[in-house]
Image (cartoon, rainbow, N blue to C red; front, side):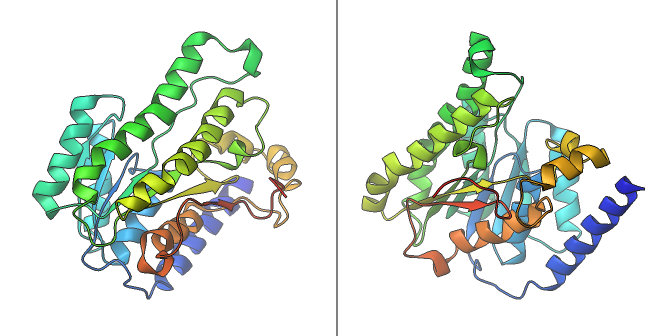
Length: 274
């Protein structure tokens, strides 16, 4: 019963969100969104395209890319897609080359790819877990930023958006290494703000709280877990991927032309900082 109610609420929210979109702030712009075949990444890709951007989707699995591209094209959106494991240099290179070939350049980079292969306290974590999480979540985010510069520097209003997490401010005990990697992304944004500003490029972060995605499914698939999670959220509900997508579209647009070096928390009022 709970699962049915949740699915109905999700469908209703998505329908209302889609029907309320009236902005065309991203007309003529080109965007890349990594890990964009489901969840938050797919919602961001859809919203950017709904606002007029041409969007390159990417994911590690070809079948997922094909499915997502077909879905968004069926909605009349201008998208393309390619396989890209962000940890593989040749696939990152191909991502940028295909974007330029298909759409002529790049204005918006959304670095959304991230992993969490293990749970547990920080001091109980294996070195392999540290390496894997930091390689994908932090190092590859930096490499995507660096490798995007030749294209972004040709844009009239370039923007980079990094997906962090509320866990970067308030670590989750069982997601300790993941949380630390998300804190590192806050530092990456701050450390590169001035350098990118000198090149005319804005960089900002988004720190989602508890969002209803496959990754957080354990937190809401049982009524007991769902109620426990909601107790720490002022709005008493989990967020929806589209509620992250709307902020991404704003940050990528000229409405945010004087915002850089910031990370915005989207958490329904979950305690995170002063």
